[in-house]
Image (cartoon, rainbow, N blue to C red; front, side):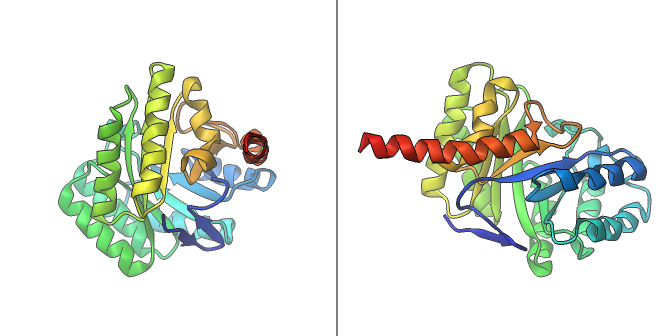
Length: 260
């Protein structure tokens, strides 16, 4: 698996990096969230623009992004508009989705962009090409808020993301039983061995918590933690998440040493 370099981060090796989502619906709420980040271990920040009021108004995005970039300094920024069909907060036509994403890529203010796998195929091609031209890394994503597809289907989606040119491939599922979490983890460790791009996977809700903290063992390079409001079921406080991430690999290495 190749690493993806984003500012001061290497995604795809070592402990999963902690990403904190920003979900403010107004300028005031958004920048209050940013102010609070100083007390949290944020390796990256994801701006969930589907939470933002009037985001489709002309000039709204291009007015906010430079301010956001200035406040975040050297912290990498993921730009995401999550559509309602993938569990997001706001509807968007294919044209609205593409236009917003292209503005974000062209702004020079973002480091990574989330592109939904089941978007319009022509839009995916255009967005991927523009991202490569502007030096923005792409996270291709697929979210299932109702179930967990089979291991074969999960691997098929991840392979398809890589084929389309994803720098990082991301899958999130909703487990209905412990076996569903095992299905996701099996797909994750298989993808780590077979794909060249890093992967991000998670099983949502409480049942899937283990998938958010054992990424280093199974192969997920990124995990999401809270600094306020959750952007998906099952996210926990980023400070608690970081503590667990620091402890688990040490414990795992210690156990393996005793086994051998």
